[in-house]
Image (cartoon, rainbow, N blue to C red; front, side, top):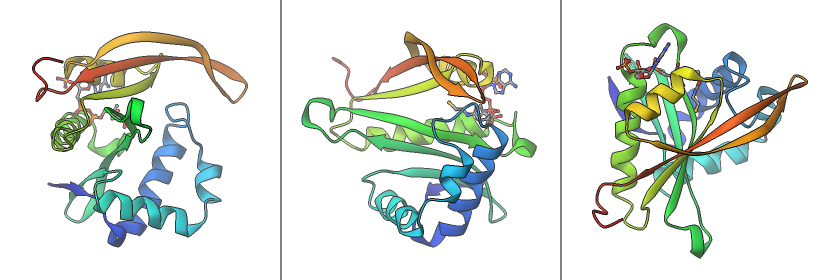
Length: 174
Ligand SMILES: CC(C)(COP(=O)(O)OP(=O)(O)OC[C@H]1O[C@@H](n2cnc3c(N)ncnc32)[C@H](O)[C@@H]1OP(=O)(O)O)[C@@H](O)C(=O)NCCC(=O)NCCS
């Protein structure tokens, strides 16, 4: 398995795999498949350039040149919140689940964030019904700090969201 950052050369994998995630798990993400499909090409090109330069890393895992998992790191830019990064878009293809891939991707994301010196904590927002993801992040040491009631409205149904955070280990005094 090959864990690495997405670059502009991964355009097709990025477009298709994120779309697969949005189609397969529409309740788990903030955006939706229709929005993704109607987004102009140059927006995705910018995402991938920002990933390559680590301004907004998107991490992927490939097996035999086939993309099987991804997760993004969105860095906050405003000065008062620049110490925070948010994980987004975590997805493992259904046929590769329960093999520790998300666990390894998360470890890679933490390592990547630790190398960005100004980033001191990670944050993730999880649908309250997503037991797999809750367990994944809790086992990795993320701590829940809040619940937003009726945070999303998907297909006419309100859903609560849970907020988790993780202080990065290179900050012993944090
Ligand atoms: C959540 C998801 C990324 C997990 O991927 P995965 O590669 O199957 O996860 P792993 O095999 O690395 O499992 C790591 C941990 O996650 C938890 N987990 C994963 N699948 C689980 C399941 N079906 N039931 C309960 N816990 C589960 C467990 O804590 C597991 O650790 P363990 O194996 O020691 O018990 C995957 O199910 C997925 O893509 N779901 C749809 C999209 C989604 O919900 N994304 C999260 C958005 S926040």
